[in-house]
Image 1: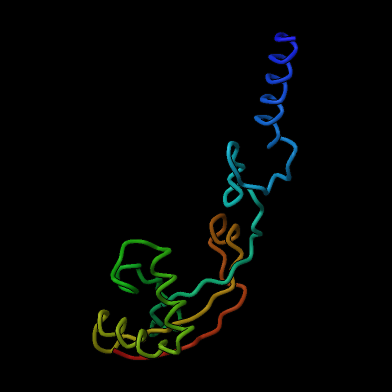
Image 2: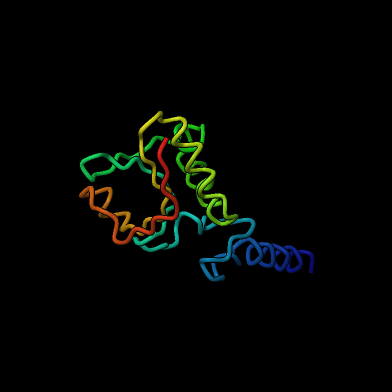
Length: 137
């Protein structure tokens, strides 16, 4: 009887430990994590809030996160621009960036829809651009 109880308890423990294997892969719980934020397909096309300098010849120059938001973190700079646009402060942010760049420099605060893979692999241009604010320092 004791042997049977031990075997049953061991089998139940094994089933409990292995049960995450039977769940949907997007279920992110203890004791196994599928890291869905890294493992799931998020698609290639995304909208990114950013700021650029408009050059006299019509081209653009990408601005560093430091010029955009006073940080070296790319994601923090994008979130700063996104929050400014969402709260109606795009013009104010544009003015701050233009002041950091210096007199006579034109800044655009914008949303770019990009194919991330194409941008990284081929330095592709954005698929779509929405200019939210333009200012001159």
